[in-house]
Length: 77
Image 1: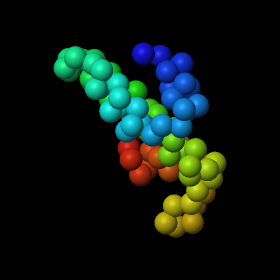
Image 2: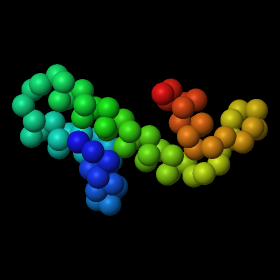
Image 3: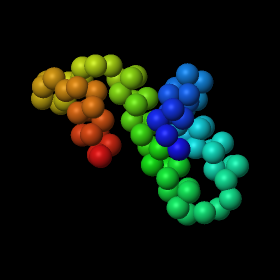
Image 4: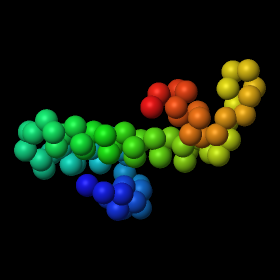
């Protein structure tokens, strides 16, 4: 599993959840493989949220946040 998979995923416009479902469907039940897939799907999800949110957002006090800051504050690292 590498970043090429992430890039390929984004070109196909699947959500991270759809991608994860299809990957798990074809994998034997192995907690280490499934955990690695989950981590990759979380990274994809973060990219999708940041892309959808845009490059600049604002918190409740009106302070400017980057999309990455928004993600980290909303969903944690």
